Amino acid sequence: MIGVIVTGHGTFATGMKEAVRLLAGRPESFEAVDYLQEDSTDDYEAKLRAALSALRGCTGVLILADMLEAAPYKVCADVRRKVIDSRRIEIVAGVNLGMLMQVNLARGYVSNVRDLADLAVEEGRHHIIRYADDNEN
Image 1 (cartoon, rainbow, N blue to C red):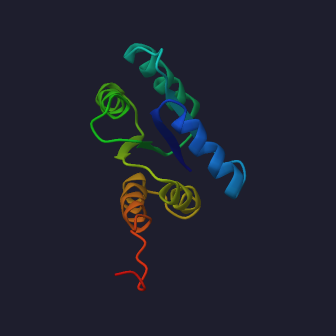
Image 2 (spheres, helix red, strand yellow; image 1 turned 135 degrees about the horizontal axis):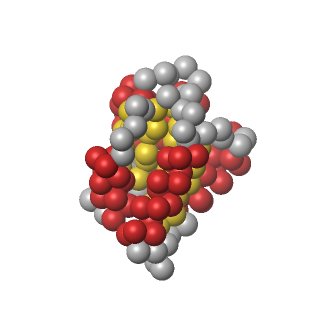
């Protein structure tokens, strides 16, 4: 199974994991890593490495970050470069709940982490829409 790490500022990650749990039950091989205000980047990196370690038995790991080019994303990219691991690690920024739900479900039939990352990007786009009422001018 492909492991998933969701991460972001404040308690975004634990909130997203709780939303998945509420909608789909307790997800397997799924870690939430919060980047709290009191965390240094070294503290955050240690938490991220602990999450990767917890997913040691997974065939690959998909990291879903809240924002592009923010501290959590940058630290994830840095850790990905540093980690000597036989597993493939992919990172996608801009996670939303629709994307996360589809990724969680797709892990049952998608075995390649690159394919899962591509699916995440497509699903993320699919779940962003502007409501338009045809009766408005």
